Length: 172
Image (cartoon, rainbow, N blue to C red; front, side, top):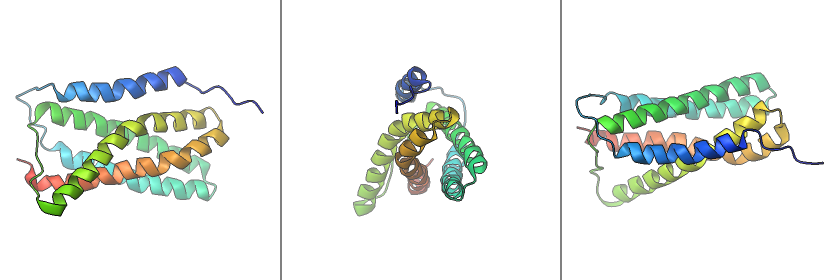
């Protein structure tokens, strides 16, 4: 059987390149005079809720609840997009916060942070390709890719909360 063409391939590749580049560029932009210091606990909570919803979504599809699975995953995509906007807004308007822990905790923090950031860039195309395959009705290819997307997305969501909890005592 011939494989279907990847829906929205060019758009997904473009977004997968533009989003990480935009984040990197916007991190260097400093807009003083605004106080968005209230955002980190909100976007950390969004990550936490996304992690829980991803697990519920996994349960839903394993139990044949396709509509529930679809709705939950669309909410997760929206939450992840909202996280990204808030994260960028906070970092454009706030001073950098450095982790103040020492010893093994410092190493653990930086390991989690580096893997979280690296996989955050990787997860964008994974989510978009997985989503586009489902929306196009290409469920066999969706399922094959979702086996990789789900654990990576879940790790990114959970590690985002862990990074927040570890660095929050050092916010000014």
